Amino acid sequence: MAISPQQSSHSLQQSEKRKLDFDILFDAENTYAHKLGLAFVLPAELREVYTNFGIDLVKFNGSDRWELPMPGRFVVAQDGTVRYAEVDPDYTTRPEPEETLRALRSLSG
Image (cartoon, rainbow, N blue to C red; front, side):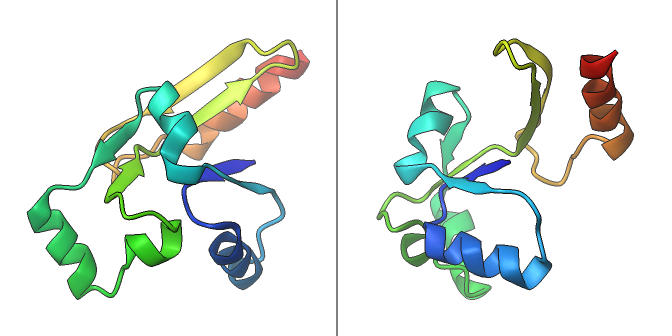
């Protein structure tokens, strides 16, 4: 599953467009991201960049807060234990898919 501050209608459009086969949960006003310490406010100059690219966070997120969660991947066991976590404030840095797959495989064996 994925968790996003985007309103469900926008996530559904993205899910259908990209043919995703997992659920996207709505995190209104980044409430859960705040609990994890992962939400950040976009500085004014970055807001301008987003606006110039036609990205309207107010419209997509349904909130006048200009904030986003840091992207991350988590593998959680059925007992709620976090077995793998990867978060980087630089959204262009992502873990290799094999790392995540290895963590998932470790749950079954």
